[in-house]
Length: 243
Length: 224
Length: 46
Picture 1 (cartoon, rainbow over the protein chains, first blue to last red):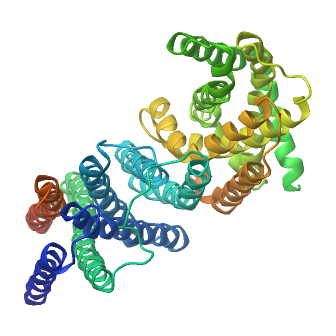
Picture 2 (picture 1 turned 180 degrees about the horizontal axis):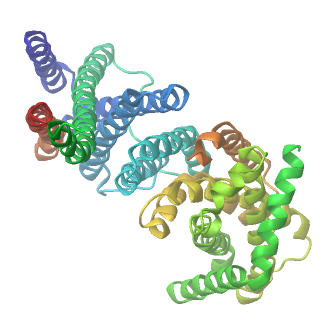
């Protein structure tokens, strides 16, 4: 308990430092000025998303290989947290695009690919909701997660190849190459901070899933014992009868 | 019994089943035609626009029709638990899956054989000189559709709302295939028809990746 | 700052989403823990 509280406090402090750095320490960008600072959280949340989906992929393979339910618990946690990070990325993107390009959305390669990813892993969550048997749920969602993860590089590659044929608005400044050294440091700090937040939330979601599995097992135990208790009630009476 | 032989037997069974009634095939073709006609209301196709939107429309019609057609592949095995019977036979699960994939490939191809000429007529596009290359693109694209679609049919067969779930699982996954197929087809319908090697390689790569994944995961897919 | 509303909204979105999600997970953890205790007691009674 204490360790957990300490870690949460540490991560909160990290967030505060990262936020402060992003808003005040990082130098002002030449063309976009203040709004460019969204870039620090925007890129950081996409990074966190990929890490979460990678955890889900690893867990899905591990589940199919070992059959242990804890891997399924980790898998669903990874996907759910990944979808959360993806949602953040998809909201902060337009919030950046609107003042800079004057439009909320554009079908450029990265945005389109990420939107597809969002839909893909939401489908995973829907699949889980629609399958009732817990073991089937685990193995089917693991299979789908593996297929979806294999699709990730294909989605990005296809959109990149496709979009380079159509000229798109260039994002001035902001992208990785040739960053101001202070900006790079702030970016790294924000990447790390949001990564830690993601891990924290992931671990909690994993614990929740394990607890849920435990509760379900207890319920099952009670139900099967419940049947035995009804049958067993006749035996003591017969014994008392002294047959 | 080798996997190839077993797959061929399963394939034969699927074909015989379908050709008794041909209802799935007919419904698929009609549905795709409906999609094509609906699009003609949304966009008014002049010659230049047909060239631009045509390929996209064609492949979207195939994807929509495919997601409906692929559903019964495993769904109807649920009725009399015939999938259990299949699995009890001394054949690998990959043979069962492969047989169904090939059957679906044949059904989709037959539907496309009807649809592509009709589409060319409706949108005034010439098929002259590009037929073989078009067939290559169609086969590669349809293979990707049927491999992933058959696997997801097996996945959604265990779920509620499977008719809605299958497209939901399949269509986002297939967007790279859609892009590649549309670009390849557009290249062929252009004024100077050309087969784009990059996109063709992409389609082949897509098919290989998911066929391999299906092979690796087929035991888990079909187990009870 | 120019465009401050957008920057602020983005900042808020990031933290609000994580925070609300974390809160919901924490609440469900407590609920599930209570349920487990209840079920364990029920099991011991039989």
